[in-house]
Length: 282
Length: 134
Image 1 (tube, helix red, strand yellow):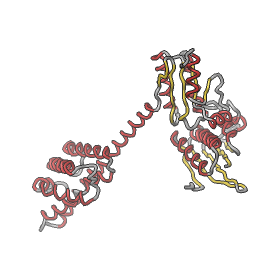
Image 2: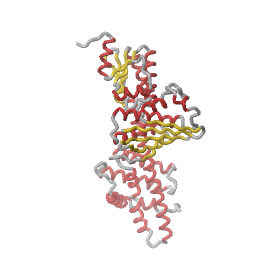
Image 3: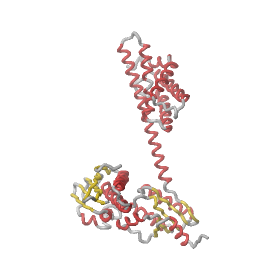
Image 4: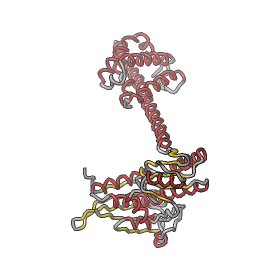
């Protein structure tokens, strides 16, 4: 069916008309978001896509967009899709960019094939619609992929960001823990803390759990292991930010924090640490 | 907004444990359960949901609002179809663990809530029901 399609010829002969018709169609679709994408950029993207598609269609293959002659078109769509993803377009809005080309192309095909048999026209429309569907779905795939990359990066950022080790005084480190303390994060915390103990030659590390909503046996175990590891490196740990409700919960849970100094507030822990080091604030 | 009185939450991953905790906290807040009991309930949920995930190979947490002589409470049922617990008394003992945890999960959870019930069938699964009154 793809053989002998007049798509390439139509794209070449009516490039300017198609571009205008298509832009009109896109404006009418209500998915343009002029606040996110300027008319100039949209025009440039649309023209580029028509060019790429024309070149690819010349090869005669209109059914398989994974082949090398469609690479330019795919790359272009991938670029447009990730630009739009970062601008805040929805996947449907991005796919509409491609799908809205159907109407102008069908109209043009109808005019061009006037007088020819109906079967031929249906065949052309079927070829073009399948092709544009594939290209439209491709933008969605790329869109989701780039979203997933953003999420993965944010997840990594979050793990790094939420586990800073701060030197609050010479010889005193503080680790403010915020959020859910799962095994992966505890590992990062422990590594960062132990490394900083070496880097700063600190004697005391304050682990603040004010921002940890739930202290269950697993969190308790993670904390105990972190304290034990720091101790092996010669640093003493103070756990601060033990709120009243957390204290009662830990007691009933039966988790033992024996031998570990704990404080209700970070300020209290800092005062204790300064006293340990024989320092006073005047 | 009052949450619907009956909900079943799947527990199939670490993230589901966090979600189960958050949902339990929302219900407890809606019922006006105090901050300390909220924290205790959420901690118990954390222990039991983790048991379902780690030992039971996944399961569900059912949430119900219950009332007794005008007093409202939240009842949570944790179910899995895992290997079951051969000796419940032993499993409830502090310090007993088949994994590498602290061995305080079941006993701790029991002490944290107002009502606690455990049933287990070897080879078929385990069901733990807890209630916290407002």
